[in-house]
Length: 346
View 1 (tube, rainbow, N blue to C red):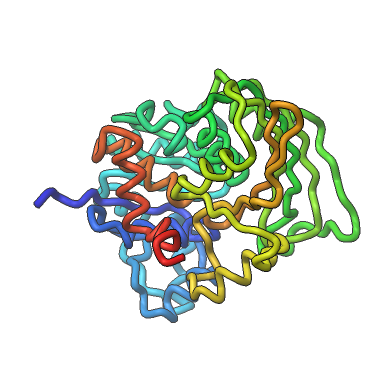
View 2: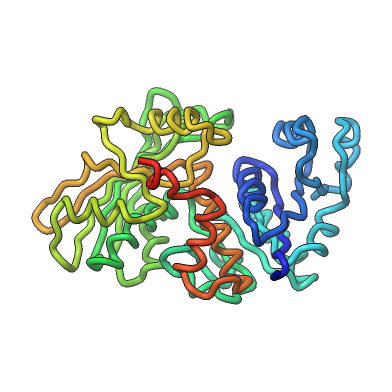
């Protein structure tokens, strides 16, 4: 039996918790532990759950606060790095770059999140769009939640009929559930165009011309993106929907089924019993798929707290060369996370 790849997670917040849970589900990986700086609510919840994961302190000078909260510590972040093959860095933007020096010191690979600058990594990575580019890479950076879901949908059509260009509008949630640091209410705020998601898509898929607009909205449960895609081959609405249905990480839904918007999907995930109300798949409304001339227009929902977890695990598989192709790597990730199983039961 092949040795399991040893993984550590730096930062046990919104993304870090979900990365830890996702890695723990992988039959060919071992979660060595997680690291954080303080007894946050996430860390306190970890203790109350019986410490299913070992906790390492990323700020040794702050250890007293953890000790006072009765939270057992297994060592420092440096101790964790020594024990792993690869780190998933889910710390705040800019901290990952500082942590990189530690990863380099011990010759350990690392995966960084979308908030870090592209220069932190060797490869700007997406599991479906450019898996092979990450093979054997030491440092990979993921795309943001919006870009991750957007690329899934665009890449899905591009591989079957080709994509010439896309124009997107992102209706962006202003903060995650439970956040207090942003106070936008009763207002919509627009960013300068083009949005970084369109630019990031072109970085990973340079053959597709992309542009976009982003609007901040005072909601918390998911982003919605509308996409106008110009295919290289003319296809019908029905053909486009079937292409989307075939993708494991795209859930095709409809308004008639009761999926009226982002809140419907969040509620459905909770009704399914998904941890934290998470959904790894993006949702695509079949009712939204229309044509304007040759162009295909559609709308997708991005569950921002969980959507990047599968691509992070894909990144481990590519960096460690566990599977050599996108089809093999993403299939293993999907299998262990249970992605696409709903297609079998419906």
